[in-house]
Image 1 (cartoon, rainbow, N blue to C red):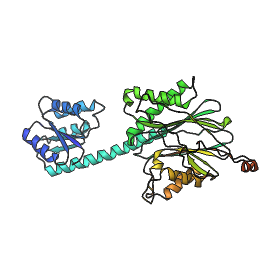
Image 2 (image 1 turned 90 degrees about the vertical axis):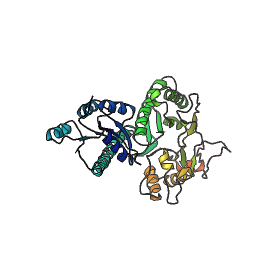
Image 3 (image 1 turned 30 degrees about the horizontal axis):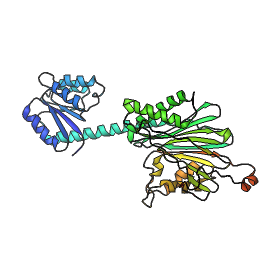
Image 4 (image 1 turned 180 degrees about the horizontal axis):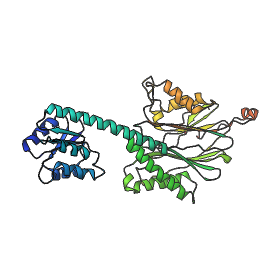
Length: 398
């Protein structure tokens, strides 16, 4: 049975029951005997389509359709007039008021079913196109127009939102000269709703950063406040998000981060790649959740890679997901390339089971350029590992 719901508004009892029976084989059907009853039904649940008689007691079909046109949440519901009036004046009046179709009694039930099916299909296509356009607009607002830059560093970025993907977001700010805050996150869910919540959530992050950075520069403290604000706001109380907040200080070659359940970053250098281990609870689960600051020193020729789960979950030709091991493998291969991010994106796609990514893809690569004094680097290869010995890191021969 289709998930579509149809409201039948007809004062003739026998015809109303017949339509309920025939349409009920394919759709979820509710009924009303006049326009007033129809408005009550609609207030309980919005239907995907309305089939209504014109001549009815208390409130006729024209009055019902006009009332629905005045309400934003109901004006787009497809509407079919079903009536014994065959005169052209009634037909034209129905068209002028925005009625989608007009069927004259007596009618063939199969013809009505066919028109219902076509109208629902047409509406679904239009809605998908509208969702895609709105989703694209949201996705553009969730991504930066440029990247943070600093002497001695290179930054690379790639974002490819899917029409029905999730709520990936990326943002950065420079609250004081030489200190950058970079936000990478993913609001749980798929489609337009996730993108809308991601847009709203990013607003919370930006406002919290703006307020708290007057008194603290700790990503963990900012993360704690974002989590509290998220859980205290009723519209977003059931919203869950992963978030990685980086404080980058190029003059000190230092990155300090707090990770709320987001994909673990990767450090890559001339000797390979490894996962940065630390990650705390996702946002939106526990108002008392605590977050930890972790600091990484970027040595010459090393890079920090951040990304969202669309990359991790990409299915390879082997039938397995890429996963963290795959990220490490492709990151090591891309090291030293002119554009390492697109090297990873293209190589993973070439090895995938499908010709496109199945979800939103986002990747940010922060690279400290190699020292010009290559001899001193080779003699003292201080490639920094953020892990203590025995911490359980995935070591790639660094």
